[in-house]
Length: 462
Ligand SMILES: *Cc1c(COP(=O)(O)O)cnc(C)c1O
Image (cartoon, rainbow, N blue to C red):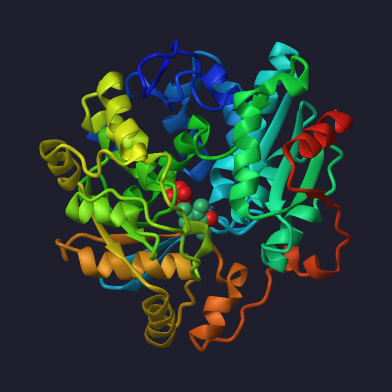
């Protein structure tokens, strides 16, 4: 399988080339040229597979030109054996036809582990074959950093530099990054905000000369391999609930549109999905776009669900590529207009196409806390704020009460105690593998908000 850029100007690449690069050279994102198709009989035959075996079936067609079946098997087996629940992604029932898919049993207690635990192994495998090394640079406001570090801490081929805004991430989130001690892991606290960190990463990708011939790799969700790994749990949940003979709907707490885009791909690969619901917090550009075809950037709002605090969603471009019939030139023109303010909506018939599958809802902090406390008292189940937004959006947007509605529970509530306490609930305890997190030694360097200082630090460590 080959991968092509959404902007239509960059060369097509193999899976492993896509895995090891960031953006395409034309500024686009890589997507598969074609998607594997699974028949209803084949999907039905997966009902008894465990998570790792299902992942192997679904992911092999995407990687098999570069990764052998047995290599992939070893990697998925190791990845999902590291999760703290036998089912890996257990389904919990809240009410009749209302379900929660718990995606927080990985090492850092958020769904990003599903992809990043595998990504580290895929990268190492590719780099060893090529006898190459990779420098990874990423900016994080919380969840991505720890999941990426956990995923690469054993890598012999990756040197990882994770930038976070100094004193602007929660203690649990900081410690989940700074207490991981691999020699190849470098935590940098930047005296600035998250945007400053992200800006330095972007500038470094655009001009990699400071690495003297070295190569930068990306671990944010522009990396195709992350999207790919997330397709699996849509199949897993649907088959467990009687699919493919019975359709299922999903409500997805959404920030960068990576997770829900994986659900869209699952549907295109043959999984009967009735509705896909984009659940946003007050940073609602996607809700405004899907509900009213209004795509204007607003200022960033800080909410109780910080992992969804975004102004624009990078992976939305991958959906737009399909809505614009995979016409890279037309898409480039649209994106240019949206970013310089001369356009603020999609062509109406393209927007209508998106509405056939997607609906959306915005949930503010007040309602988020109400949902956490309502679900706790009526169903004796503690949601994290991101997942609570998903549950609420699933209820509001549900057009088919006879179809199971599955909300993706993207994080464990212990990671977001502020919302849990505001909702009047008792603060949950860290699970046993993290119970001494607050006592572990930390390693992190604080640097000024200055690109040349950060780049000099990086080269000094290589
Ligand atoms: C990253 C994250 C999200 C948003 O996922 P996207 O793929 O960016 O849409 C939602 N919830 C949690 C807890 C996250 O960490």
